Image (tube, rainbow, N blue to C red; front, side, top):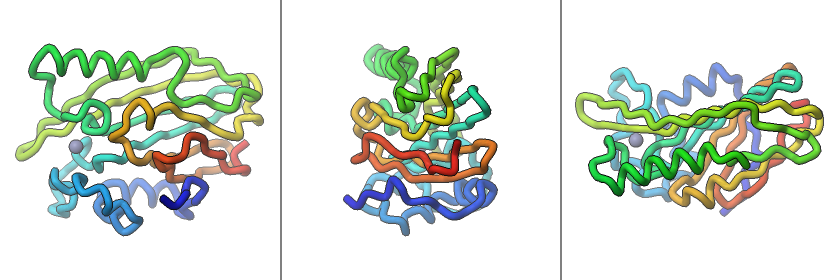
Length: 202
Ligand SMILES: [Zn+2]
């Protein structure tokens, strides 16, 4: 697979968010090899209001906000990618799967690990499994927030993850980085363990 982790999408965040609600367009970027993505009706453009069900299976989003020494990372992943289903847990096994995923996501070591030179420590984190029942289909997602303090934020030059190993159904993360020097978007493919942050983000 082509390594596109350093590919910068030259759009403003506003534009990126507009694209987010019409996610099926992303197929033109080579996601069409994930055959199951369209099976849940994400490709229709019927204009109905969508929140969680606007997600594309296989694709998570990670927002990283850097403000001085404070770094917040926010992950949203389809339930499909994490536990393989998107309804409320129906039996003990599925309850255990959700609990186990939440505890993996909240693990103290962190799922997304900034360069050690940045000296980041997790101050607070939360993980939730959110279910959204629509008229015709139900979607769910995992929502995780990490709040960190980095004593050397200028050394936050790369980010490593165990996410794709923990959750092999996840194929890609759309990364959005916001700092005082601007906003950048990147695509993080599952065959890449570590990404370089854009040099302009300091
Ligand atoms: Zn879904």
